[in-house]
Image (cartoon, rainbow, N blue to C red; front, side, top):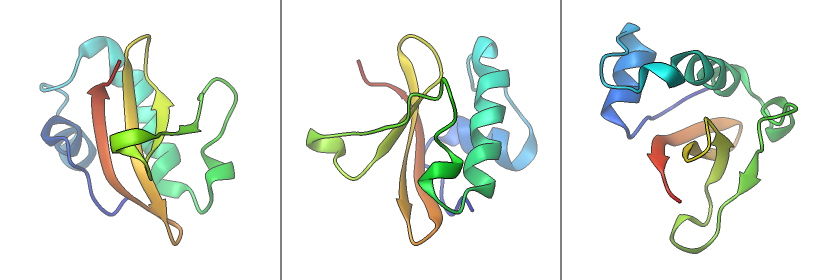
Length: 92
């Protein structure tokens, strides 16, 4: 279950289906990722083929990353079966 979303545009899309603050080319992929995150009870539920799920290091240690496109990722923390601090960013 998603407990918190940092990115304002992502939160608006998740809560109200308003995609005006997100890249229109990413909407289908973002919707798919958010659905996986919402219903995940373990990281195995999120790690589907092509998702490129991997842990982050450095300043983002403790976060996991899912690929949206070449440069953009959705990152999140997974704790006690919950998804927290979901963010949408270009971290490359």
